[in-house]
Image (cartoon, rainbow over the protein chains, first blue to last red):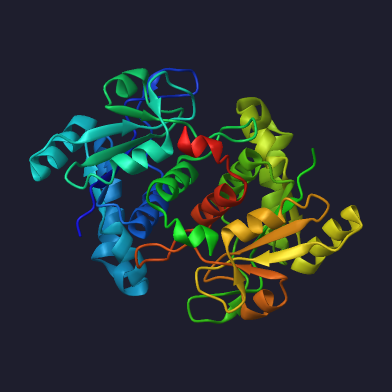
Length: 191
Length: 191
């Protein structure tokens, strides 16, 4: 069955260390790790969002290697996960692509490490996702996170992962934990 | 308060793609991502386990850069997480170090993507960890996973993370999810 959850990894607009809005380079580990999480938890697609031509080409070459090239023979397991990867120039482009496909506006959910006034909890979003007729796009920021504008333009902002006084997870770890909390098998927890 | 949970990332003995027992190279992303997870969820220490001198030196150089060198000024947040990293040559060496410190034998918990006859569930281990007088060492395999011998020599084997028919998470993602399941804030889930 088609899943209604999509992941977007945003390389622009995001903040850098000094709070400036920039475009980050693509980290190949982000492509692999998050694609494997997406496949594991059954997300429908994983969009790498970057306006930089050099980075678009990098992702396309990487995906091509593992999905259709020599890598697909060397390690077929990577083919399955990287087949979920697509590249888009902007969040709006992803929004339109998903909304057009579903003929229904996609609900955008921003994530981040800090608190946001109108944030929703994990259980609330898990329940919302049960409405399988509505597509959701979960947005993750690289660098120092999604801009306030992206959060304001989203339908929801997900509550942060609260640690023991330190909240500097890599985006790869944050995606893994959030997908597990939203889509992970709950029966397995009490096995 | 001192935590009773330690993480060990095993580079030997583990399997390669063909089921041979080998030593893998250290991936710097493993050092960073897992250290940040360890710090976030309050683990007491994170051991990189490798018998290879070149890899021991690599980890020591990396940690030195971020904890005491130029990196500690550039990004002090990394200092906090990487300060948890230690290097050991064997699982036994880690076992002795923790057991000596606690004056009590550390309980070893092996992890893996496949089922194991005597595996325990996440809730069971979460409960066991509440006995704060007993130290636990959670072992993760690189490459194609921990050997059967390591699993057999452990006190427990943790149940695998069950996905939607695909169980090929990166070790970084597996650590993130497992630490969240064992130590993550449960209140936050239903916020």
